[in-house]
Image 1: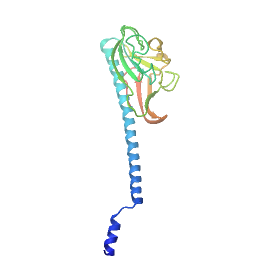
Image 2: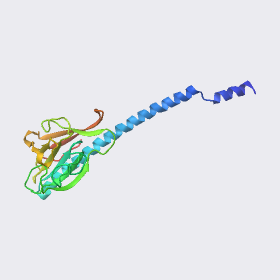
Image 3: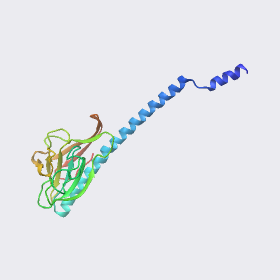
Image 4: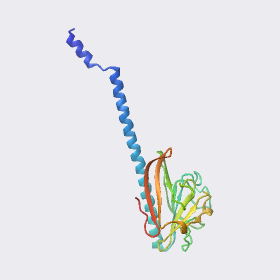
Length: 218
């Protein structure tokens, strides 16, 4: 066998070092791609939740004005009421964590944004149903004392004129423990929706709920 043929065969082979370099490069590129995908997922989750909630508040306000009957939206925190439906409060009260629910008041003249017997559940949806990170609300004082919703819930009611009333349940105690905090809430209530992992923010959006007018995101 000629020396030239042997050299060609050696040139056609791949050394272990070369394989390791290629594997390392593939690993780095995969990690970058995974990080980009995670960022996209968390950003999408925040945007979807913000848009859904803005729509829910907007529809609730329009329902109230169209029917001349107060409707309200209740938003439950990630640990509110435990994992079971109707975990707290009377029948008809949605005490499920990470849920938002739209109610029609049984007494149409009431401006209470907390559940009362006779209120009718119109619609509900999950705020956070994805396995990536955790989704919560950074709520400005004095709506709640803590910085995030956690075991709290808040409700926003719209009367027949479309005016906003704000109630809050900080104790996680259910329907009977909602308190009216309208007087201490600014005309423009701003909630920060964030997706985070290990308390590191990965995506943030802002939901604005004015005293008069429809909610907006972003």
